[in-house]
Structures are given as structure tokens and as C-alpha cells.
Image 1 (cartoon, rainbow, N blue to C red):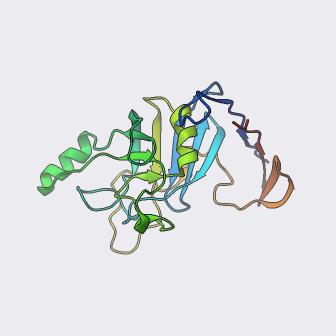
Image 2 (cartoon, rainbow, N blue to C red):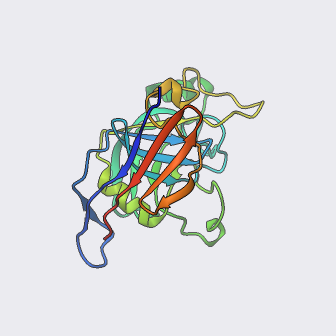
Length: 223
């Protein structure tokens, strides 16, 4: 049986002033965020509908769950957005609640600091980081323009699911961390990782998936 998913970026934004980085958002609520390390993708979801899709950069050591301060890893598992920084060094930022109690317990048993200050934020400010892949200290980075949308759309308390990449032989995934989208939400993003083929229109394209048909619609309102 064919399954369908609508990727509807129907968000309506209003800029608070002509040159402001702050926007207001009156579209559907972002109920969850999914970050896929393997494909460097982030999706803002309204239940089973993807409102927005972004390419992301990760920590400079992108494989495996964050174990301690300074390891350059991006956490894996489920967290929540719990703060925001309008004066971020990276344009704007939205924080997640790493470390949680489990992270702190594991770090304490290992005799190390779990670290912290994990954010979704804008692009690099240092010349050495510009154009470089996976340049953060463990955060999730998008462009400055994109973080303006994320900052407006995502509310504190929103769950964020960070799905691991395929592990190299010596990496140790966090016990209990979902290995794929199928373990987390099997009915959404069924075409994840598939490139669009034969665009029919800038606002409508179809991805081919064996046994499934997925329609993706983009309807973003420009500023």
C-alpha cells in the first residue's frame, strides 16, 4: 500500500523590522525536531508533516554520542529545547537540555565532565571554519538565515531526536539510542535520504521510493 507524506513549508513569517534578525511565525506548531547525523539533515515536524528541512553541520567528531566536555561530539538520543540566546556569537541559537541525568551519571562514573552548551545555531564566524564540514564543538549548525526561521518556529519544550550515523568499528553508540527513523517514527519521513528526481515545478517535486509515493510541497512565504 502506498504511503504519502506532505512536506509543506507553509510557514508564514513576518520580520519585526526591515533589518531585524527576529521574525514572528504564525504557521503550524513544530511538535518535534529530527536530526539525522548520517545525512546531515534536520526536519522541523508538525506531527507527521515536515514543515522545514535543513542541511546541518555537526561537531568536529561527528560519530557517537557525546561522552565528555571537549570531545567534539554531538549528543544522540532524545532531548528538549530548553532555552534560546538572542545574542549568540553564531547569530541566534536554540539550546537543548544536554546533559540530562543519564549523561551526568555516566560522566561522573567515568570521572569526567559531561560538558554542555549544546545549541542549534547559525553559521561560523571564524575564517578557519567557513566552508568546512562538521566544524562545531558539538552543536548543530545551519545558516544564519535558516536559524532565524528555526528561532521563530521552535518553542521551548519541543522534543529533539538526534539519530546516530553509521558507527565506525571502534565507536560506541549510546545504549538504547534509536538506530534509525524506523525505530522512532516509522510513519514519517519514509523517503528520508532519497534525492528528488525530475523537478516538475519549483514548488512541487516527487521522490521515487520503491513501493511508495511521496509528494513534497514547498510553499514558503518570503520575507
